[in-house]
Image 1 (spheres, rainbow, N blue to C red):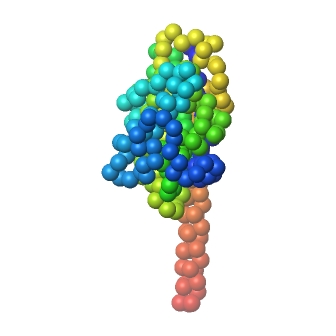
Image 2: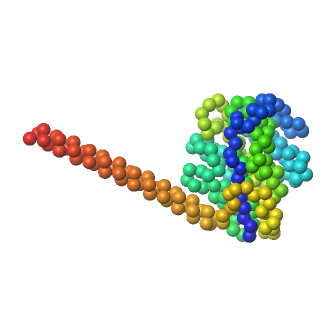
Image 3: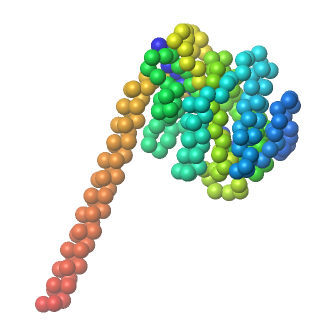
Amino acid sequence: MPKLRRLAAPVVVAALALAAPAGASAAGTCADTDLMPAADNMPRVAASTLCLLNEERAAHGLPAVAQNPSLDRASVAYSQRLVRESFFAHEAPDGSDVVDRLTAVGYIRDDVAWTVGENLAWAQGVLATPANVMRAWMESPGHRENILGRDFREIGVGIVMGTPSPGPEGATFTTEFGRRSSGLSASAASAGVTTPTAKRPAAHRRAAKRRAAARRARAARAARIARSARATTHKRRAKARSARAR
């Protein structure tokens, strides 16, 4: 079965959205496009982001993507992790990636073909509005390709307060795109695939586990060396005290 993933380089919106006037409204019928994210309005920010995304798809003759609860859970959890652990990448520090995340929430299964993609962004101040984040994504070829992906039919939207880097108040955005089908053809699934190409989930999980095991082994060696160094220092101090006592 074709099983593919599409990843776009993560976007720090400050690097891309400045080309447009800050706070400029997006054309169309979506509400809250200039809404600044805050703790009490995150559902409205997420709804506006999804509306803008589907507006872009409609403008290109594509069907809307529908929210999927499993993809929503994965998106929110990953945005929270990016903020909590202060990193910004599709691959987490433990080696897990979007395939692992979507397998963990039950979206990816071995009995169906699937194609998935992921867009990330974080922004601070006025650049964190849905309009500015969507503008930045559409100006980035990889993110635009995911937004306009013909294969995708479902999406998860995860927006949380906070950013991976310190600074003014902002928000972090994750969108997980997907489609599952037992009849997904190889020709359809392979269209527009960005790097890296997908590996089978089981093989990918094994590789991630090997990387994690190697990191644990390195940490254990470093700890043993540190303990040995401390023990040597203690012995030297004990000998020095014994010599002074004599």
